[in-house]
Length: 482
Image 1 (tube, helix red, strand yellow):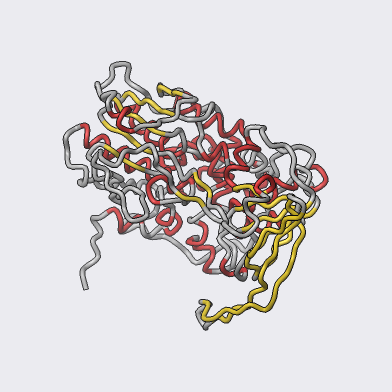
Image 2: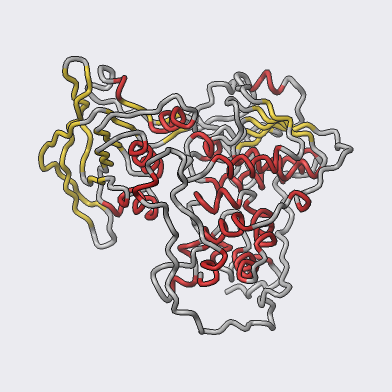
């Protein structure tokens, strides 16, 4: 057995389970301590150093930190780490004077970012203070990427999104809106020193079943439909809606449908509950709003009568599971018809790069996506980097932020003519963290107070407008208990 290397920062990082579980390694204990002291602005800045978007992530993060929380060792529910992040954002003072300073004299290097989502914005956030000139190409009229187009405003208010994005673009990004990139070759010809692709996974998966083409007017791809709602192109939906799929996009689609006038919304899941991709809290919020989640239904046909969608036919499935919960057998018990005026497909997303010519030195794999180094985020062409959903497919915002951080390091080393694969050692600061070799002072004492529930807008009020934020956030007084 190798001796413990106490000189390596990982030794200390791994001690703090929640921080290690966070892809961006946000210093969770520190910002919670600051919140407990009422130092909300300081807590916000600790968050922003690593996760860049505390107000956004405090509402919609996938919370990989919470399953790792030590509180889970003594009771089922962890500390509300994510919602405490929002507390810091909600109660902070103005932070303009504390944002990174951008030098007036640039270093002469020009970086192109394709897409203005969270990964590209993180790259800009990290490189602008180093003197880089960052040009960001965005196909839509506002920055934000899928954060703006696919997360409903009742979960993520536009004002929060715009404010935190503005903290980055205000540093001096050359933001070119309504400017889709149609040729990477043409972009490279403009002489950029490096290119970062943060274009997301913009193509929703289709469901090619009998009746699909005949009922096309009432069958919608989930992410495209949410985008149309966000930009005001869609403002109504049928009374009876079926959602196919049970991930987080499906949860956004079903709850949005209710706000657009649907009276009956069913989420159709092919497998039992243990196989759902949606987060538990997303499922809870949907069911609180009377969304019905129907399990063990495999879609087989879109039913069309007189040229109009009338519903869908499903197979009723039964599964056998082994001791570990894995499916070992399945069988069809029969068929079932469910009426519907509209069907929304939320069965996944995939990358699409028709604008990347295949003779530029960027290798593509058998799935026709670029081959990316998972540590440096460099493609097989030096100077071309990918991050966020564009790199390894759909994940979530906090992963995209970390991709952006790592890609920014690679871009900087590339421009400095240093080996991209060689990384700086992670920094560590043990001051007042009680984590030094001779300062272990953890005790087994804990408060038995249960996790505080997030206050919500009442069911009566929340459906009056599409943009009423459902979660109210904790007050400064409420957060003391958490």
